[in-house]
Length: 188
Image 1 (cartoon, rainbow, N blue to C red):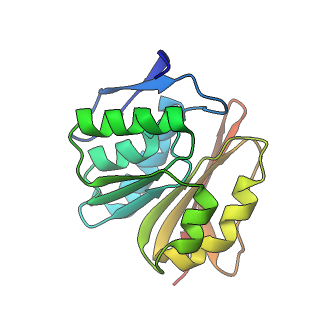
Image 2 (image 1 turned 60 degrees about the vertical axis):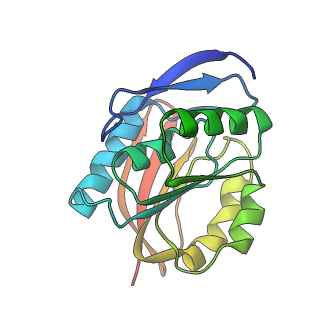
């Protein structure tokens, strides 16, 4: 495995302050602590701190920082999807080291996983694909099928994003440096 070049940390929950190694893998860009903290403050407010009955999908997992953060805060089921073998090995090592049996890791192409997912399965979907790829646009048509009514979608990108207004409502949006991040809610 490639050596760690930097670290991020879990912001809250039972694993608060736990460092997560970041491997040197092409396209890997971990969500900064500040942005993750803002995202999970938004989610915490909307869910009133109740994660115990929530299922979370981190579709382009990379370091797993978003998914591991959800697990640390008590999500009962977290799925991480990653196709890069170096990042995948790191995800498995971190999950095992942190003893997180509620975290499942898929070694597949994210779009293939989306096509095969069961309907209305997740409360929160985290989308942070490599910038300057068409992955976000290709993933969004599948969201309504796998997200529960009232479920949340987080999108992180290098440009402002939107989802179909007839299906999703923009709840919160912000920008930090060159990163735009948005939280949408699926309409009932």
